[in-house]
Length: 138
Image (cartoon, rainbow, N blue to C red; front, side, top):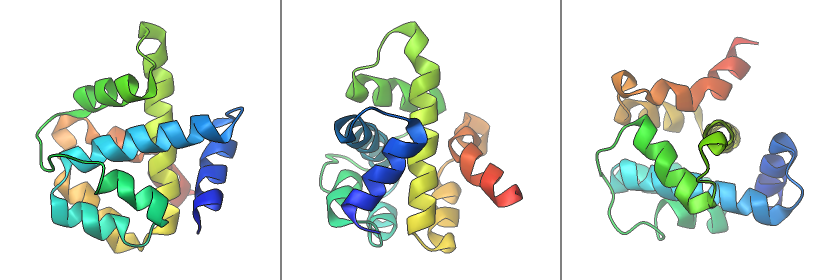
């Protein structure tokens, strides 16, 4: 999958009017996710992704391995997306789930399992994989 295919998939699934919005959602989600997981895991997850996308998980992150929960994740993504109104939270969560679902299609299954292992379910992180798990159940 190349960059245009990746962002096109995000744009189509989120029904966004333009590529810029898809890139913004992708960047916000993956940069924030890169901050949460360890550097080595971010590099492994980024490997199969298009170069322009893998940068968000690795090069755009100043500090990997930070500890924050699902709610804090959504706050950070919302800020990066510029969607900070109270009504925007559901959209931000949907954007993050969709980006991760597209990532799941681009990486080997084992990579996604390793990502899950770094995100404790008792902090709400299972919500991030809602679309991935829903697609697997179909």
